[in-house]
Amino acid sequence: MITARPSGSSALNLSAGSSRRVTPGAVPGTLGSTHRDGECFEWPGFVMSRRTRTFTIGLVIAMSVGIGAVAVARTAGSDRDTASGSGSRRPNLLVIMTDDQTLESMRTMEVTNAQIGNEGTQFGEYYVSFPNCCPSRATYLTGQYSHNTGVEDNLPPLGGVKKFRDSEALPVWLQRAGYFTASIGKYLNGWGNDGTITPPAGWNHWFGLIDPSTYNYFNYSVSVDGVERHYGERPEDYQTDVLGAEVVATVNSRAGQSQPWFISFTPLSPHAEKPETPSGESGSGFKWAYPRPAPRHDHSAKGVSAPRTRSFNEDNSSKPAELKEKEEITPGVEKLIDEGYRYELETLKATDEWVGKILDALRQTNQLDNTVILFTSDNGYFHGEHRLNFQKYYLYEPAVHL
View 1 (cartoon, rainbow, N blue to C red):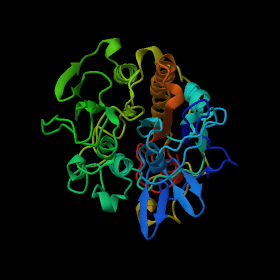
View 2 (view 1 turned 60 degrees about the horizontal axis):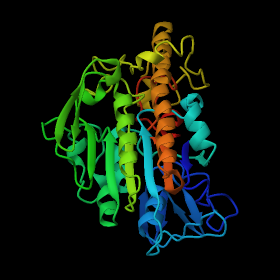
View 3 (view 1 turned 30 degrees about the vertical axis):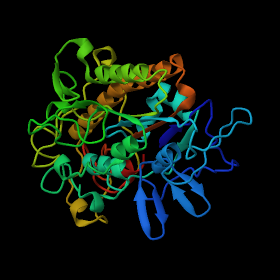
């Protein structure tokens, strides 16, 4: 599920029956697609139908900066604006993208569900086209499938940040349209590995995690507009807290500004605390790595087990050859799966808290009524379904349905 909170107290009329009707879903197997005159584009999750067209998160961009003539109906009284019209008040855009979060785990995010999901629109048929971090994020930033972005894996030679062409991407387009842009959190896999920490094209403010320390919830480094800053092991250095505080500070800094803004907030949670290696996710040191919750949330999910769905540890004899080779999950591995699942839920608690704090900052600075907020993940994750665990990539529901 992707949840979208429209600007205004429902200021963007995205309900069924409005003149611009929401379709609660995306094209199955994709992040949502726009098909027009033989062209195909996609953005994660924000889908609206208008006659025969299906718009995605690109709709939010279109209605904000005039990329396409899409009207935005405002419900405050009889006032109506068109975002593409000159002189209109274009909405701010906030995208919150977690890492490896499953649809099932959304049930535990009380603040996010209450303040975004219940106040906005939930898209229950939202699917990613390539359930892997780097390809999915490249799609988010371009609206293109991986065979067009050139990013087809998390690591070289098929993927990683160096395969990504950032000179023509979402932040660049938004800058051209007059937006202030900020990226806070994880970028594409491998960013900063070679020592280059100059912000990519298109970002006015950059608070980017530097690989390989990106995958440490403590003791990591950040590029602050090209200047390295290190965080240690103190409780206040917990990565999600630092990133969330930076989002709040950025929101506060834009108060009273006439320039609209776009903030991309991409915390690591609930990704495991070790990066992938050239040998893949099943390589030594990664398979049993877990995320690390904030100290205040340690053991808060004690006793919780991963769901035992019908596909959990199922007989794969009818599956493709690669899955047929998967070994049956033993009781010992089941315990590891449950432990990892509990850590994931505990790690998400800090993210959920910061969703609330960010919305509080928007309210306190009188920006909430003109901000469109989208919450999603880059992909899902397996917890024993189809005998897959501690990985994504395969085109089954736990990895692709968000």
